[in-house]
Image (cartoon, rainbow, N blue to C red; front, side, top):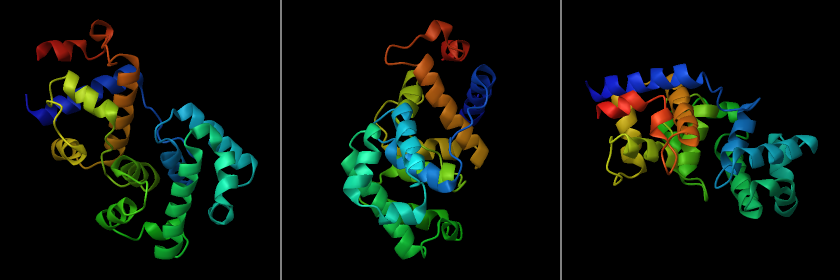
Length: 217
């Protein structure tokens, strides 16, 4: 079996087991962008509280977020952890949208993915995972997102030895899967669900939906 076929089989098995994950939760592109930045080093539950606070204060708006004082913003997003740092990161990201894209998230869609990714990675506090999450989930670009769950899944299923860097892992998926935004979206979300449920630091392989697939290796 080729690597491509194996990955597609895993995807179909996980989709059957867990169903569609409906990622990324967010009503607008801006909400997804804010969520991607706030979710760094914290749980999504904490991010949801922060986003609810932003909505309650009528701050889930580009101009409002750009105008608010960093200290005040930090207090509103406090539940997300590292809130003063994240306030600065969020404001820095919005400032780039203002300066480079004429203050419009919709203008971003007119630029190619490589330029957008390079621009995002040039923003202080925006790493590959955050940039790619924004590209995939807010801008619908076919870019595979890599996180610690992705690496754990690959390692446990003997698809890599743990030595690859972020770009190596991303290239592995993108070289072996069709360039499809929906597929990348669902697959990443399903891997997260798998690792939270079965493929933990101490894997629960016997009850895992990929048990038979794992045994073949």
